[in-house]
Length: 174
Ligand SMILES: *[C@@H]1O[C@H](CO)[C@@H](O)[C@H](O)[C@H]1NC(C)=O
Ligand SMILES: *[C@@H]1O[C@H](CO)[C@@H](O)[C@H](O)[C@H]1NC(C)=O
Ligand SMILES: *[C@@H]1O[C@H](CO)[C@@H](O)[C@H](O)[C@H]1NC(C)=O
Ligand SMILES: *[C@@H]1O[C@H](CO)[C@@H](O)[C@H](O)[C@H]1NC(C)=O
Image (cartoon, rainbow, N blue to C red; front, side, top):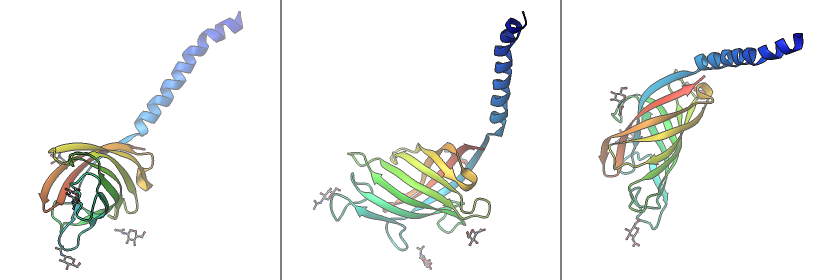
């Protein structure tokens, strides 16, 4: 009987079609690795990170409850004078009672020729007393639409509340 035969083949064709779609979308996903440096200068000349709220007037970024607003340079190398590739704009909030974690919520807005105007949205727990920690790349714009990934953070300099943080980003996008 013809109808019986065709329904027996239907699941097979469906599986074939679905795997073709999966293979196609899999090969469209690109993985990109990037290294850049966050210049978080809180004290001294040309500070780019500002405490805007806290428990009292003397609150520092290392005190629980302090809210920081940042417009930090993002550079190609660890030196403050090394070429700028973008800006990190947004906030971080000290959100651990003993003061050892800041919650990051900011955009990296690229200004270099390759990704000019594209952004990565960063969010996560930065337990800065650890040598290495990981935060999320939750999304992006421009060249990074639909992006997802993570950033491994390593502090390469920390003095007088000023920090230079190496950011190794691994992102998947189309
Ligand atoms: C601060 O900015 C001024 C003007 O751009 C610059 O001349 C100076 O070298 C900067 N100082 C530091 C410590 O970055
Ligand atoms: C201000 O807050 C810090 C913690 O953020 C605390 O250590 C300090 O004692 C407070 N100072 C006053 C005068 O309340
Ligand atoms: C990035 O774009 C802005 C305008 O959107 C432009 O002024 C600037 O020159 C561009 N920078 C690079 C490196 O292409
Ligand atoms: C970050 O990437 C650089 C190369 O771009 C590498 O030398 C370094 O070891 C990486 N750091 C971590 C913590 O993976």
